[in-house]
Image (cartoon, rainbow, N blue to C red; front, side, top):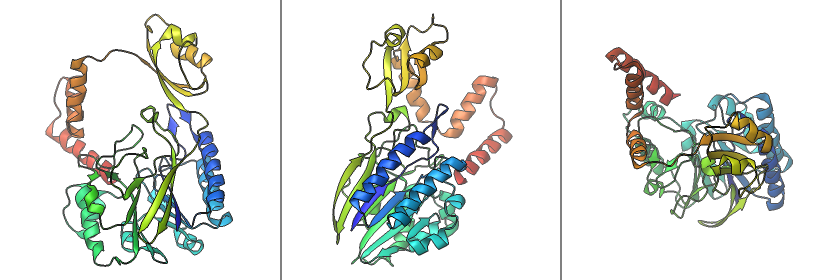
Length: 371
């Protein structure tokens, strides 16, 4: 069985006011051409098809046209799960009749216990979920994302047919997988990563959420990565999808790169060198984040940079980090979200939050976690 594994399309992505929709059209055209050539038996899209719960009409049209070609024109079965950027309700609209054409859109937790079967291959879908959903599902207190995943798998074990090839499709973080700036936190105030050992019941684990495709040493757990670089922390990451060839419980796999319309580049240097073109870059048309020295005497530097490099998306003053500033950042990273907000409020207002304000803050953070 040949499977194409992709995820994290983030259709409708906007970075610093710039829409990536045209860039996404370019790489999805490549993807469609590749699918025609590869002729897979199944395509798996492991979450975050959209970048927002409320995609605009043009974004939805791109998604529908792409999936329609893959499923109806190319006649390839597709399994899609929802990610933390997707709206479950919007993504699953029409899912009940899409199944008649082997288009399976899974957004609900209970679907985890209903494998999609293709002969001797069983595919278990675990779309993005909140800890609150698992608490309600089992009527049990749960403290972390890892505990939730462990509980779900424990309840699944008794009905798994271990003579079959069992594949998990999920959207979460496994320990050891580094995150980038464009990956939204799945939980607030809880540990969201999952130990690889919890997933040992499955012959293959195909995941979304992490945008880097080469992140793990576990030999049966894979991220496809995103189809484009979506933040300047991803500039050194390859982008594309994976192709798997499965035979019984054995498999081979390869990563296939997609060529972007424009690459993201981070450039550090002096303003005068940059404006005069005296710096190394892949292309003048790249999406640039300039970190520059000698900006204090320059009027409207961003406007001037955009005249020379129209795809400039970010400009920040370049400063050498001191050990003290590094330590401050490290200390902040150790704080809970509520502690960061409380500290910020006290610094700005010169008075701490009241008990009522703290209670309201915690309620807001809890509501954000559940939604």
